[in-house]
Length: 502
Image 1 (cartoon, rainbow, N blue to C red):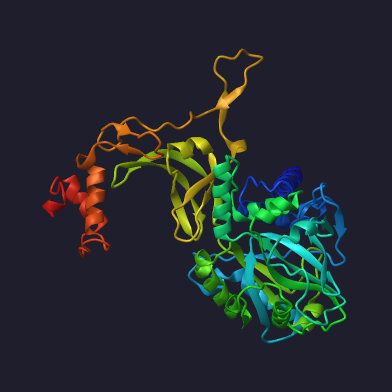
Image 2: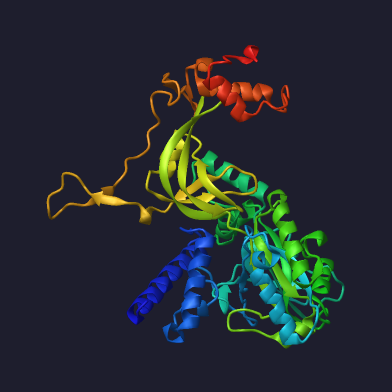
């Protein structure tokens, strides 16, 4: 790549990351998933490391977060709210050293710099919410501020007071003269679902995920609206303390915060472990537990447990040297819609399915994603050729979350003259077929129902096959050896027309 190409690419990356950061931190309306932002950020970091002359004063690699909103008064953080460096694992690699290479490098660097054979690390989930600083003076909450750009943030004290889990006064008879606590404001999954149901009932716009819901709720200028939203909080660090002894380890720090009345994550989710093997074991355990947790997380965090060793390691410009965030495989990713086809279910329900360019998301390679029903496809305006954000969480069927409209393929608008001709989408909007794609029977959609159905009944090969699979399944007759492919062949060859033929 030539020098001009390198300069142009670095400039493009800076512009993209600045825009995506503004959408995420200021507008609470990200247009790309976290994994896409991380990928671009790492590319820019690699370019600047290899060519230091490309780094500019406005590079996103030099800043933390985004600019604060002007609607709130500004608060300058006495202790900057730094972000963490990231590590990733290749969960498709069978060999431990290859799978957790970046994690092993982190542990090796810490041991080398400290000259210690084994390091003890405090661990905790990486919450997917909004970072908050809480300042207590003589045990009473005085000020709450968002991270902002890391140096100054937004004064959200009145809104923070409405969160029931945050103590307005510390649960101790002789509190420190000054205590600054850092933590995460978030919305539990159940509260997120309830909020979206209420938004739909009022005809208001729903939130894309709990993180956006929490951020939008906390940034309401009317604190009464915030009070109606069920926000939660977890403390994860102390930034400064005066008039009391600072605990000697991070684990002890968390225990002390809990004694003071702060909610902290359950003890079994924040064990102290030793070495890279202990970190990797914790990472894989939490990743398995992730779908069952009541809140969203996008990784885990490791911190050298000893405060004395933390101080010895110190900081780099962007992050502490003694801590790192270990991200999970992305639950969201961008890919292309190659086709939209229809599946016919046991009851005749017609489900549009997006056939996707293969993408690794949520720990597996995804090639299909449900579009639920015609109304959902039309609402999201998913078309062939679109770049879409696909989400897969746990064992949930992958789904298309949103279309990245700026990447939609366009063509010159038909019928325009040479000078006024605009553009239109290259592919038409989706329409559900009027006939079943399997048997050709009419597709019927009853009034008031979202689901359209094939009217063919058991004369439809797809419905017949699905019905027999349901009958033979574990929850019904549990017929050993009668699997999906075997049933499909029996139906295809005409050997079985109903369950009686078995």
